[in-house]
Image (tube, rainbow, N blue to C red; front, side, top):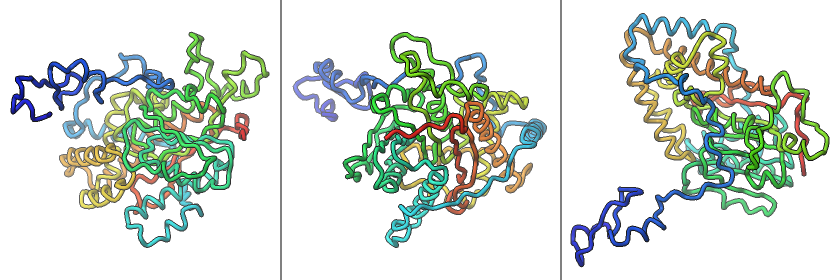
Length: 433
């Protein structure tokens, strides 16, 4: 059919599909085709709420297109570096090591059939599970929400670790259609897996039917959640529970646990008016951070922190670009590190991420005569820690005890920082079985 227009069979004309011009359709069958075209707009799921986790609503605050970092003068660059160091003064830059493992992956880790790339992924997954166990997040009566799930390998190992535990459910959030998913490997009858094909920006967990029905404490997890996706996931977990209405034109409930309100509300009376504030608390968050150069001021949760240290969207733009120096400063090893980093279970976003890193690194080649490789690497790490600290402060203001730690060696992954958060003692949810 795609080549029919070349043969002009029966004088029938083929035209580009108006929904996706990459394919064609017979003109006299256009209306029939539009009803079944794979590119047609599909009905939105019930948990889709436009821009519920997007963040910034004030368009005036969004900066115009910025000058590329490589086009800055030496004076402008030195001024940026000075402001970066001033803003970072007093921050905890030397993170604690929490390089752990978990018995659920011991057999896979010792299997000689696994190659070097697979072994690196397994070590990271084992450490993530070890940190979840350290925070007492691996237990019964919980719903694990994996953001940027891809093939779903992290949830798979969590399920293996909870083999004899009841009342466990998994929600795998991934906006792209994913091949070679491991969901089919879960044969336990009491283990429930559900995929949510939606952008995190529009996901309202309040409206996910399985959470509405069972009201389980949620544990948000993610392995190498790129840039802005981390901020969207954090806002989805700690804000959208209370900002998402129930469809009856009601006013959103107040924030659940601001720092000044941590003593309010987790234990209301059983009356009808309290049911919307009382449900589905977040038991914990464990996310392996990645790709700070893909952060976006619009979605960033640490904007208030940046403003408090005299920084704004312009500085954020440059710092997020400079953050790639932490992993791309050493040109000779970048290719090797990135290809072994994310080849196993990441989606097409990973390939895009690697190309972006290469472009960012090459764009900074003009700075070779100004900054040494080690200086750029140090400044890149500083930018990452500054952006991450904004996330930590955001979580603390929302009533969480948050921390950053190294969860694996840099030889395993250059993106080796894990963000963890659990509710402060006054708002720890009770597991429901």
